[in-house]
Length: 278
Image: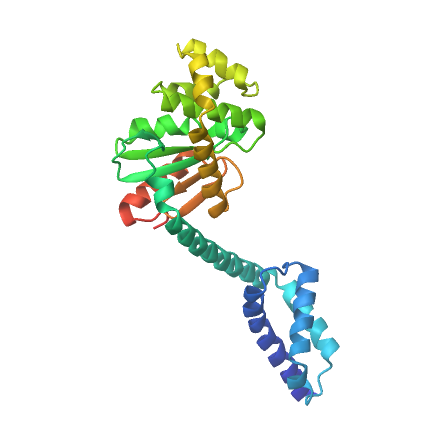
């Protein structure tokens, strides 16, 4: 009897340790009660031949391990943390490889819309859509960063994904830049107010900024602008960016409406160690 208990606990410990490695290789398995039961059952099935010579009841062992793990949630928490760290590392590696393949397209295209210092020592890239409420939320971060960092270069990428209005206005906005008007003033004005950003709003902003809207409409039909917008989609697809806003600093993609301090922190990290996270 005592020997069976020792074997039981030994097997539980071995399987608990193995479970951590097993979960990492099967990231699709949820770490809830059903997930634990599924994983443990599969592990025991795989180890059936090794256990066939013992007197341990496999079903009882299954239940015992489940109860032990579910009674000690910190074990699951540790496994979850390890899995998240593993996934973050894999994602960082994938992102780094993707950035290498599109480096020139992303950073060195002469048609890029650049704010700040064009020769800055750190580059921040933002993908945005004029009808994205979160883009409107983070828009004030850009002038704040520029006003306090003379060595920062910012690339704005028109990434219209929220309907035809967004595409139409993106065309007009790029036309503003190509015709030599004040893109930054036009950009900021489009983000003011609560209404949807449409061609009509772009017309009003143009009037306020003394921009010839007829000239703007004509330039917006230029096929080169189609090429620029398609380039944005190509880059986003390569980097698995499917929402706005999205920022790129170094080899890190930061999705969503992040705080300006978080952006500043990563910019300083780039200067300190050459990475967004030192």
